[in-house]
Amino acid sequence: MTEQPCRPVAAYETYQEAERAVDHLSDPGFPVPRVAIFGTDVRLVEQGIGRMDYAAAVLHGAASGHLPGALIAWLFGLVDWLDHVISALLFALYGLIFGAAVGALFDMPAHALQGVRRDFASFRSMQPSKYKVVVHEAVADEAVRLIGGLRTTGGGPIRT
Image (cartoon, rainbow, N blue to C red; front, side):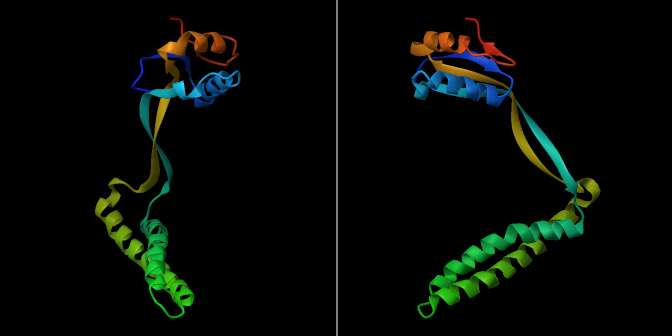
């Protein structure tokens, strides 16, 4: 979208409305490869999901370490030429256990080093507060005309 001159043709408060506008454009055969949805006014949102104590830190470490451990061990197990299926599965089981133990052993001290400064678990996400439908300049007038017939709950075509 940066190679061609572009113009915003509509702005919406939710991604679903912007997506609906692009779908509305595609229905009569509008060239969708010339359309993009831009999220603007991005903010970081951190959502708390629970309290983090030593037991939770150990469980979190075990949960994040078991799958990589199993995968790496399974790959090593495939190298064995005799009974490679049984060997791979057995190695994967050992790797699962070893990965969980290593993950737990690394997460617990990391939690202890943070002390009481951060005793909660959370996840972060980036969330735009507005979504703009942007099209190539060559087809912008047609896009404005088509989006003008779309009923929305918020936002809508941009007057240019």
